[in-house]
Image 1 (cartoon, one colour):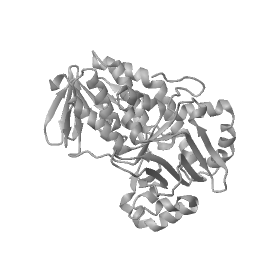
Image 2: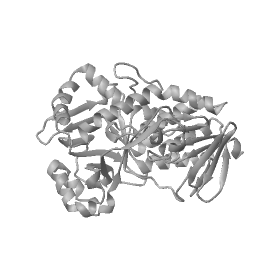
Image 3: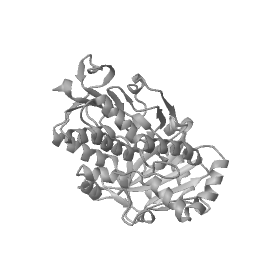
Image 4: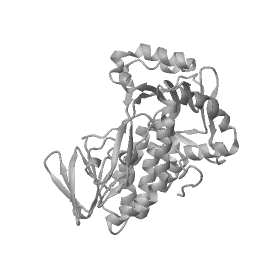
Length: 399
C-alpha cells in the first residue's frame, strides 16, 4: 500500500542500494527517478573493502568482481619522480584490495536486483517538493500529481533542492575545482596498471584507474581517465581549451598516457564533474532522511562517494522497522562519527591536490611520501582509504 511505503528519491548508488536493502527486509518501497530512462552518469568508481562488504551482503559482490578489476596499490608522483603517495592495501590487511569498476556495470547490477525484487520504480516522475506531518509525507510531482508515503529518503545528489526543504542546519558549497572523466579502452600493449596519479603542484592532476568491463560480453578492459580543472576552465572547456590542447597538457604531465589518449578523439567522450562539500547538522528531519551525496557530498580525493552510499544503505537497513522518525534518528547516531571524519578529511586534503595553492602541495610532496614509509602512518592512511576510519586518532567502523 503506497501510503504505508517508504519513498526514495533518486535511483543512483545510494537510492538503489537503499531500496534493495529495505525491500530485502520486507519493507514496501517506492523509488522515484526524474528521468524517463535512467542511465548511469559518470565514469569509474573505486569500491573500497567496506563497500565490497555491503555488496557481499546484498549478494552482488561476485558479479562485481567478475566485471571490475582488483586494485592493490595507489601510487602518485611528480614529473620529477618524487613519490607523493604509495599505499598498499596489503599492508593494511593481506586480503584487502580496492575494486575498480565502471559505474554502468555497478548500476546494472543494482537496477537488475531492484527489478528482481519487484520494487515499484517510477521513472520520469520528478519530485518537486514534499510536506510532512505526524502521520506521513506527501510528495508533489512535476506532473501535478501527489503521492502519500510513511517516510521519505532523499538520495538525489549533492545539489538536491529537496534537501533544502529539510528543517536542518546545512550548507552545500561548490568546490572551485572539478574534472573531466572518461573510460577508454586499454590499448593492446598498454601496461597493466593500478591506481596511478601524477601531480604538478596542485594545479595539474591526472589519474588512471583500471575499471574492467562494462558488461560480461565486453572483451576490452577499460581505464578510467581523470583530469583536474578549475571551474573557470571547466565551463566551456571544449571551446576554450580544445581537445587537442587538453591532450597535450595530459601528455606533458605524464608521457606514458599517450597511447591511451590516442583513443580520445571527441570532446563528447569526456564528462564534466562538479563537486560540492555538503554539510548537515544531522541527516534526519522527522520522517525525512538524506543519504549518499545528498547528505554528505565531498570531493573525489578519498575515493569514497559510492562507498559511503553503499554503507549508508546498509546501516539504514540495520535500523529499519517501526517508527520512522526514531529509525532515522538512530541512523544519524550510527553514522555520525564515520561521516564527520570523512567530511573533515575531504575538506582538509582537497586543497593539497586541486587548487592554485603553493605551500600545501609543497608540504604534500615532501612529507606524504616520507610519512607513508612509517608503519603507523601507512596503516592509518590505508584505513582511511579503505573506508574504515571513524576518528583522527582511533576508531574503526564495524560492518
